[in-house]
Image (cartoon, rainbow, N blue to C red; front, side, top):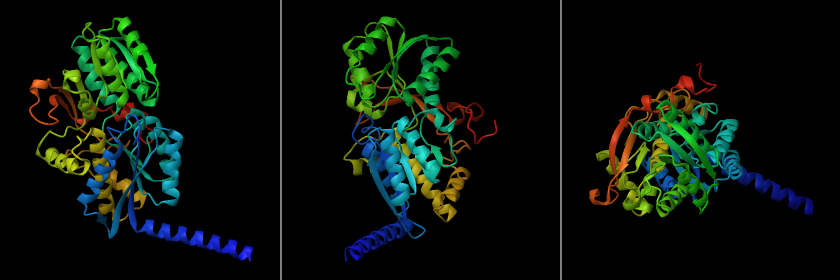
Length: 402
């Protein structure tokens, strides 16, 4: 009797798995995998989930007779957890595409699983330029900014304007080191020099020792090669130490509009920021932001969240055009098609997976310049993607014949 009972449990489990797999086959399942409780929760998090849902909504929630479903999970910025969730999603939960990624370290872990399982990864949160360099893959697409473009727009402009000596306060993981590396290149090519750096752990509440080293260096510019809540902490504490009042310039190489919103214009006024998206660019971005406000309780969308929307929208358009959700066919179509949505017009996807977004160098307004809610930026420079991002010939992507 025990043997029969045990066999019955096995059969039931197998049947349940079969039914789950069959249901997944009839659904286009999008998994938003990112940080929903840590330092990147504000610029990605549940806002990225909302953005993915807006993309699904644009297609009426269904393509090729298959319902579009958006699920999500928090990888806590831990590569092992990110890889485990991605593997489970692909193996047993029928997820067709993963979006966002948050921290670059977690993003690389997701990428390796996506590569092994031949599933598509739409990268938005991770910023390392290595995603379209040595780590490029046929199934990964880098929407949004990267460390090369951020560095080129900000560090080059500041160095040429006289900020020719730099000290970096750098996040001690893949993104931070890539950002400092790429920024150093542009600082030196513009005639400047890096006099030192200090690496801080992810999620630190105390930047004092790192900022004091920067202050003691007498560098003209303190470069913040960090992001999320960490850059907020650095900017707040830099104010407490009087770094700007002492004559040094603060340069945030990755500051999101969500950071500006938390810190306020008084603390961030004058900061020059590189971004691939601003909600108030034109009528189309404002109309999309209105939809985003409606489902997030009025939160301002970051470029990570806009990038998730753009990436998922492009994926769904490719599924529709390919007439299938087969990953190989869809990836091929994603490369062939140009990206067109509320803030991209016929943007090329390169063979290395780089999406050639237009990048903007913006300056944060003074409090008395802001006339309405989230009126935070004025655009200084517009840089077409072909100019903003690293030339494909320099990336060492193994998929490309350089």
